[in-house]
Amino acid sequence: MAITSTSLGLTFDLTRAESVQKSQRWVLVSMQEYGPAMVTMLWRILGNKEDVCDAYQDTFLRLTHLPEKKKPANVRGYLFRTASNIAISMLRKKQLQRKHQQALSKQYPTSQNDQTNDLDSAKLQQRLRSAISRLPDHLGDVVVLRDLAQMPYAQVATILGIRVAAARVYRHKAIKRLAFWMSTSESRDE
Image 1 (cartoon, rainbow, N blue to C red):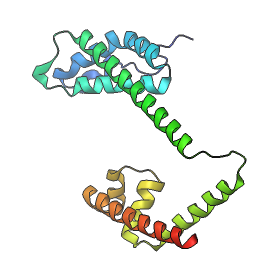
Image 2 (cartoon, helix red, strand yellow; image 1 turned 120 degrees about the horizontal axis):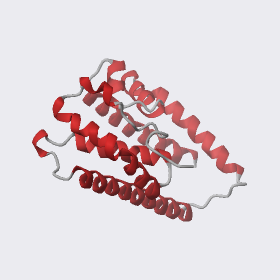
Image 3 (cartoon, helix red, strand yellow; image 1 turned 90 degrees about the horizontal axis):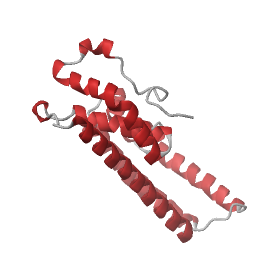
């Protein structure tokens, strides 16, 4: 199957470019002109749709965040070099994650048939739920929204009517308390 920027939904309709500042229209032209070839290159390096889309987006975000007077002399060269650097960084990060996962699996081997691990995990989840429910409301709400609902801090702050910095501080305090409670309850269980 041929992968193109159109099949990935990465093209941009230049007819809707009226709302874009005139100083940034060259970015849209670059997307239209170099996008398909860039997707092909990224696909060859990364090999999956999600990573290709992420690298493509990161490349053009970097291009749009250049200062206005810093437009590269060779836009095509800048785009392809930036895209390849982003793709290589993504591959390195994945390789490092695999290496750490392998090291952890060697350090803490588990048996797939070991049902005690499932019981321990269920018990640990129950202890964590209990500990979260013991938190003061302002700390517990942040933990639930940030960690369990996986919302960004900005959204957590908006929902709770607090500043983003306060949400970060509350989460930090909550995590410290939870870590202490979990470690003390673990020592009592042994």
